[in-house]
Each structure stands twice: as C-alpha cells, then as structure tokens.
Length: 220
Image (cartoon, rainbow, N blue to C red; front, side, top):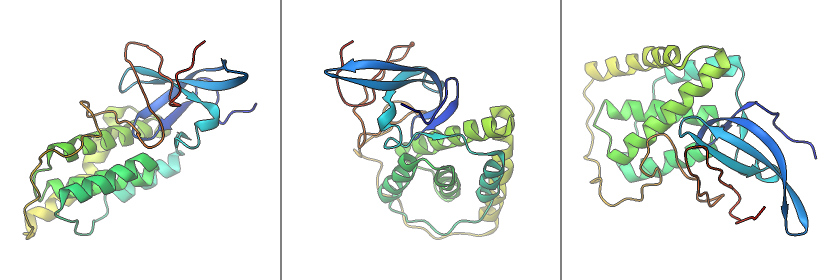
C-alpha cells in the first residue's frame, strides 16, 4: 500500500503541531493488517500512531512551500476586521480553524487574536489557543524557509507590531467580554497541544510512549 508521507518526513498534525514520520509499519488488527505512521511530536515530546488510512481524515498534511510560508507572513501583517466581543464564540470559531489546520487558517487565528489582545486582554482559554497557533505557525514557517524558530519569531513580531501601532492611534469602543468561567478547555493543561475529539480518541503519553490515534484498542 502506498503512503502519502515518507520516512523521516516533517508533517503538520492539525492542533497537535509539527511532527516527523519516525516509522511506517504494519500491525495485525483481527483478521486484517493495518498500516500505521509512528509520528514524533516535538512540541509535546510525544509519539503517536496514526493509521495511514485515517491520515487524510485527521488532516495530516505536508509542510507548505517556501512561497506559501512567505505569503502567510504577508497575510499576518494585513489589517483585520472588527471581531466579536463574545469571546466564547471567537474561541469556538478559531478552534474550528485550528482543527482544519491549513497555514492560512492558523495565520488568521494568530492575526485576529493578536489584534484582539491589543484591544482587551484575552481570556485564559483564548490565550492558550493563541499560543498554540503561534507556535505551530512559527515551527512550520521555520521548516519551510530553512531557518530557526527564533528567527521566525522575530519575523512574526515585525509583521504583527504595526497592528499594535494602529491601536495606539485609534481608540476602539468595545463591549466587555463574557467572564472567563467554566468554558470547556479543549486545549487541556498545555498551551502547545490540543486534542481533536471529533476525529480520534487519543490517549497520548509523553516520554516516547506510543499512542494509537484511531480510537481502537489494538493488541499486538
């Protein structure tokens, strides 16, 4: 069976981060044989196992080209429209974009939440989502352009900072956000990884433990 990704290839796992294909292997599942990717996620220091047949459904994709990475940087510096003062609605809308996982969607999350943070401090859950999206964006652009994440962070700051200057010159009337109360924390306890509950039932463990991202409890 042919696979979309190659051994040692860097890929993007939406809402989880940039990963590397460490192994492509087969495992018996009842009477059938299932092919898996074993993927190392550096940001969370975890290894997950994803069935090759489910990789498209889960949104796994290749790292973008250098040209597309540059386009994302340009998009980051563009002005944004006014956003709703309902933080819970913003959070859900942006969470859905993060799960889709395209670099354009991730760029828009970073851009709009940065814009909003200069109007009013983000609630805790939104701040976690912003940090997750920004880390994912920086990591992917770094790989696409062949530079360090630190260099990319400087580029992101340079693109976003003009938005901050706009807010200093123009007062914006806004309503208070809803209280940051008991709203579902789909980011868990980390600002750098999220679980995609719609597509899989992950039970990831750190320290190089394997996790099977297909919702089934398989036995070797």
